[in-house]
Image (cartoon, rainbow, N blue to C red; front, side, top):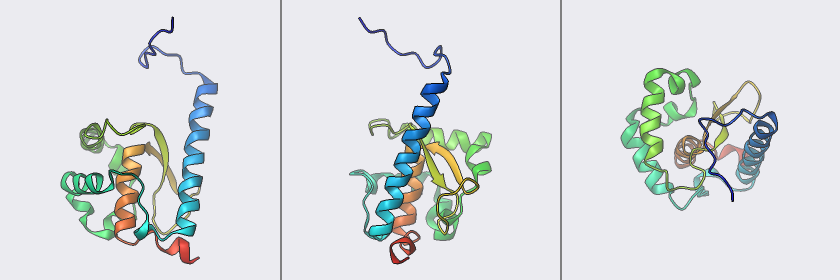
Amino acid sequence: MATKFDAETAENLEDMEKQFAVKAVMQAETFWSLLEKIPGSKLKLTKHDDEIFEQFLQDFPEYKEPSQVAIISEDDMKSKEGKARWRTFCEKFNEIEDYNFGTLLRTSAADEYSQEGTIFVVRIQFYAIEIARNRYGLNDWMSKK
C-alpha cells in the first residue's frame, strides 16, 4: 500500500530536484516554441485564461498598465508583502492542474529566456503574467522574428 507524500517531512532529494528542473525547462521551451509560431495575442494558454487575467488585474491593479507587466521584479514578487499577495492570488486557482508547480518566467517580455533574465515562479504566476503580456501584445515580437 502506497503512503501519502508529505512535503513537510520529505527529504530534499537531488534527483527529484533535477526532475523538477527538467520539467520546468521543457515547459519554458514549449512556451517559447509556441510564441515563435503564433503571436502571443492570439495564444490561449489555458481554458481559464479569462478568469486568471481578470483576477490578476483585480488583485494586482498595478499590472493594468502594459509597461508594468513588461518587466517583472523578482524582489517585488518575493518580498514579504509580495509573497503574501501572490499566495492569496495563487490559492484561488488550486483547481488548475499543477498550479503551484515550479516553472520559469522571463523577467522581461522583450527578452528571450536566459540565465540572467529568468526567475523561478509557480505556474499560476507564470500564467497570470504571460497571459497579461499576451493580451497586451508584448509577446507578439517573437513570431515576427
